[in-house]
Length: 245
Image (cartoon, rainbow, N blue to C red):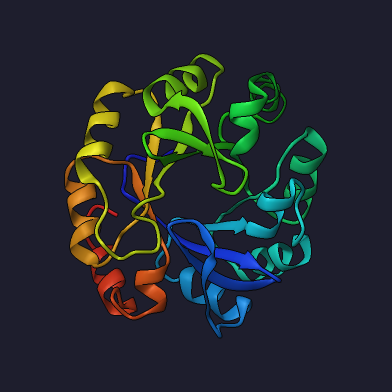
């Protein structure tokens, strides 16, 4: 990965359409009337890559929107990372065949650590991303509906030992709330795990949130609702990327 700050705008899919959940709650869903191709083309003008989560797949335990992911990948000129329901190597193969540059493993990183180690060995550190989603202090699984007994520190130590190098960390309590990210959390994790590329996710509400993360040395950020609802604009992002982005 590069040393520049990475911007990963997010497309979360339910029923093949872009949505945002509030604090990971499927009952608090906002749908957006944006064609996937238009989103991919717009994001390609400024992003390091596009973060795509198949929420139906995450809930059901197997990818469900491969066609939509392929549509995004075909329209994008930047790398796409995709996940949601990834449980075995065949799921990874399917997402890569759909055009994803790298694949996100979430629940299985908690429930089947040997699978993560196998995936990194098979596909390499640059094609596997582990999603660490924090709920009430512990790493959550199964579309954020269940909690493990693993703290984020313990979980990241496990991932590092298994050869993982890229991790996206989401504070579920902040996700989709536009309340600002827990900046100190990401600063702390960066210092505890300097060998990991940690991408912050959850709560980003305006361009200054991205500046704070960048200026604190965090590797990058995932954001969605702030863009969809106009709190972060395309001109702001374009100007932001004239700096170390």
